[in-house]
Image: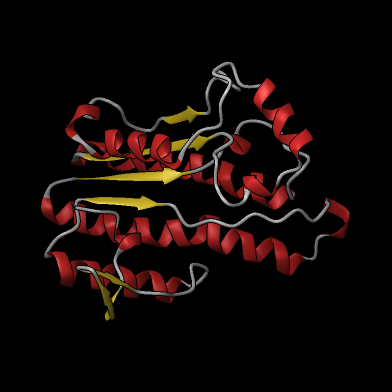
Amino acid sequence: SPSISTWHSPATMSAGRSYLAGDAGSSAFAEELFAYALQSLGRVDVLVCSAGMALRTPTLDMPVSEWEQVMAVNLTFPMRLSQLAVQQFLAQGGGKIVMISSTAAKNVNLGASPSYGASKAGMVYLTRHLAAEFGSHSIYANSICPGPVDTEITRTWTPEHRQKVLQSLPLGRMGTPEDIANCALFLASSMSDYINGESILVNGGRYMD
């Protein structure tokens, strides 16, 4: 089954796909989203938690409300989706969860707000906890920690910063969305059936663990 985060309401059907827009910081929307996935697909076998946000407010300037906003999107929303998925997986005999975390979960990035790294590190721990608690029920949980990926956000970098990042990458290139998607596909498939509780760096060798 596809990631439930890609399924949306029939109101905006387009080219055979449907989209459900909502607030990724809302636990109520997590429940609505999962219910729609079950209704549309009949069952859910794979949950991919890929929604996220990053801010750059320095530590001493960051209001508590901003910290809570990042945590709501990056950590609480995946936790609630995971609860719903695990309940379904227990009833049907198993399933797979893939968290899209970040290299910031393992390495300090002073260019981002501390809320971002803390939330992404929390995703890695949540992954391990789910794997340890529910692995005996054929429920898998793994994280992906992407490095620099060529997206609209990274295309706003200055040429100097982009060159500095490229020089730090042994492969000499930025990642692509397909690089991350391919790892998620692997973790969602039977090819990864002896991998559980792991956080996999997909970052061109910039950081090695």
